[in-house]
Amino acid sequence: MERIKKEITVDTIKDLLYFPETGIFIWNKAIVVGRNSIRYKKGTVAGTKSRRGEIIITINKSKFRAHRLAWFVSYKENPNIRDHINGVKTDNRLSNLR
Image 1: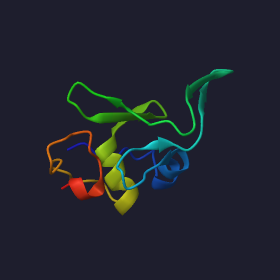
Image 2: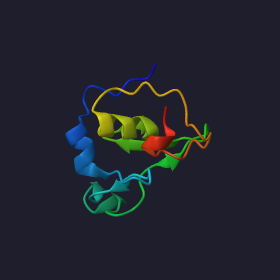
Image 3: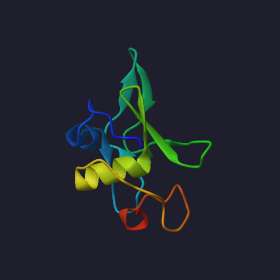
Image 4: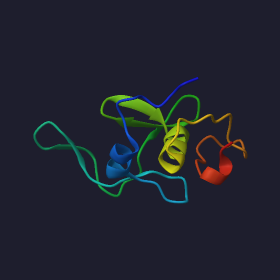
């Protein structure tokens, strides 16, 4: 089972991302790469859809599945998520994870 990497904390995630009840992560701040190149703009939706249909969010060069981040941020424990209840892999509302 994939586990949330040790080097990332709930505080780090909450500093970078906002997670509302909609289940869609939003960037709290702009992420700048290089001198002036903005990689992610504040207020934009975080993540991209993977080949498997899941949302993947990159933080500090590490990739995380959004549904696992949602669980980790909300419950402060490594997730033991089996699936999305409604079968929609992009629906990361807590009420849809089990």
